[in-house]
Image (cartoon, rainbow, N blue to C red; front, side, top):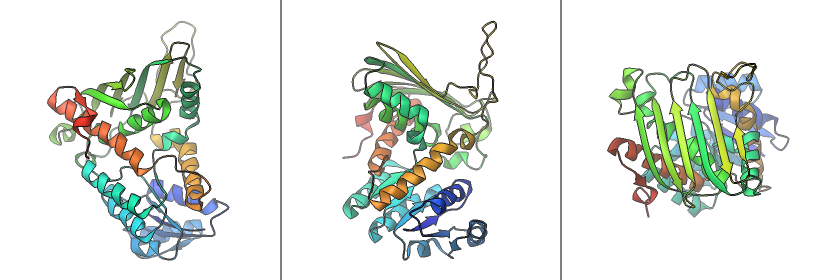
Length: 333
């Protein structure tokens, strides 16, 4: 297989190494908006670089898109119109209308597609899904999700991020759907801007919470922060009539037990997402190569990404308007 990859920042460069090492890949071609950066990464990996992203789509069997967020939609549409299987980091587009447009294009073209919600490839979340789907926890009654960054993103990124629910918690919304197999029908969200002035100035928040209702009346709570000094904290609990399973509760968990004679957790907390999810990032790219080869179905399509974006949009509207918002209010079509 020949793969073209566009975008060689931190995530893109790591994806490139995984693609290069896949046994079915015979050629990897790199491109970036900064051609010099693409050339350097290509030289480090021993692969070929081209001058423009468009050239990375020539004479290849599939593409991996890890470019800047603003370029995702057009790069995905270009792949669809060329009939190329495509992997793309989230988000598909900065808004619902743009995501629907991309979905229409990939459906019309019929191309295999996979969106980068890497938690679906994390061993802990996979075990939680298995526990829910096989009834190990009994009947699901409640779930709790946490995503808290140790440090906020760069100030220049905040106004363009889309807000904490679209940028950060969309991962929680996606994994909630994947683990439980249920759909969110209503969300009530709140938040506060207590950190850098860029959050309030851009209409965003750096502390977040939400109450979600699933289509079987399961109650879900969500918490988030851009200033979690204890470390990078991403967890999920699923509780049922027969048991409770927790994801992300290990010796790297960013918390301290106050119970006497308890030393858990014993390790150092992660400080950022890359260290926490590196195996999942590697697994998702290997999976996409198999998707492009036609040997396995996609684990997360553009259609899945759209459903999570609807929840993020409803949460954002709820926070701004101070009211519960049903998902049907933001759905298009």
